[in-house]
Image: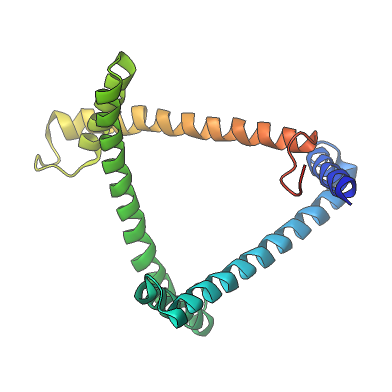
Length: 203
């Protein structure tokens, strides 16, 4: 059975990859991708049910964080019912999503900024070299360029320096991260296709 799983995974990956270059395999490629989307959707539903069961068990046993589990379940069930009643495109549903998602994203970005500065200071204390200094200076400069400062919209900072930092340095760093993610995904996919990595079963 293990060999069958390896052969099936490699064959499916090769067919999907070849479907981009061989038009005759486009139909099989679309079929396999549809199956993968269905499996991903089922996995998401199973994950939601598992989330509900875990937090319901924590509430029933009054474990650590039972109050937070209760809030999570109430918000999850309420959002689900509200979404079924209103639909995902209703303005009130969009307002609810934005009222939750946007503050959460802002909080995560704030935590990331603080973590970067703290990590750069610790790195500078443990290993003082040019690269650690560059890391700290870059983190501080990007924070200053992104923060809302009481300088108005005029001046050198807002007129030239801030746009240059955001659209040149920050954009270059983001593109570098995306290129690294793409290369890592490509390498991982090739290792799975060649059978070197087998995340779908034991070695």
